Length: 126
Image 1: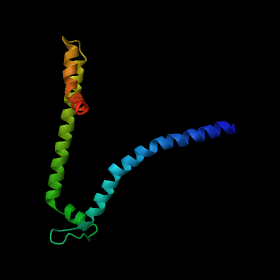
Image 2: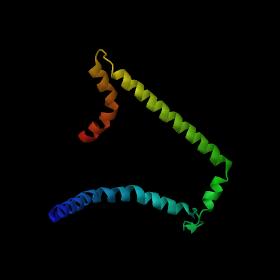
Image 3: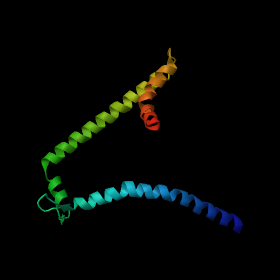
Image 4: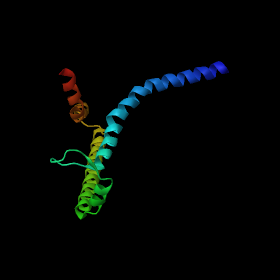
């Protein structure tokens, strides 16, 4: 029983060891810039005085009190919702169409996949 528990613990350590490089990459390439951007958002700079001055949440208070911000945010949400619905709807309709028995069905499926596959092929060739 103890050898099975030891083996299981060893397998978990190996699994964590394999996951560690990916976790470090995600942390370094995604979370670190997000945290650094938030830290920088708490300061203010100018071309005359490039040294950052800590202002705290004053920038956010000013932004949330500006009616233009709320107008832009509304436009952004409407645009994003419309684009996502349109892309998902068209993609679903094209998938339904390509699932039907059509003449030259293989060619049509290949042509639909071409914009998705082609950049990777070009990069591989280069």
